[in-house]
Image (cartoon, rainbow, N blue to C red; front, side, top):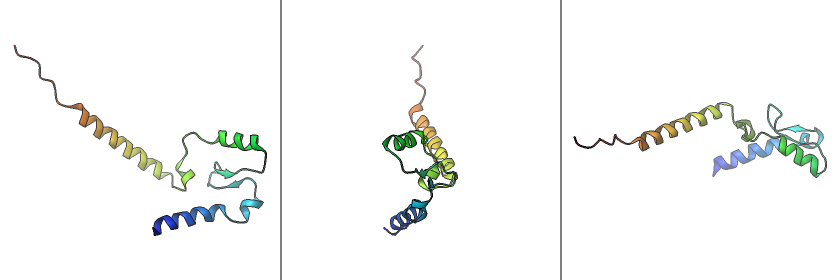
Length: 96
């Protein structure tokens, strides 16, 4: 749809430009954590990939840091809802 096209065009506009070839490493994020690495051999690319964060920040996807807060709030709400659903009622003891 039109929103997918807009997102794709925006993402591609960041990477497909002359500076991506002339600047090394070419930053893809404001912090520089995500960048097009300098030209090298296979081992240098693997080293770069292995140095990336295991849990990517929102900036890896072009999102604002607040996106992480929103995600955490949604996950906390889901956890709370699940706990409330599985908590069930008390199991009333037996007779006496």
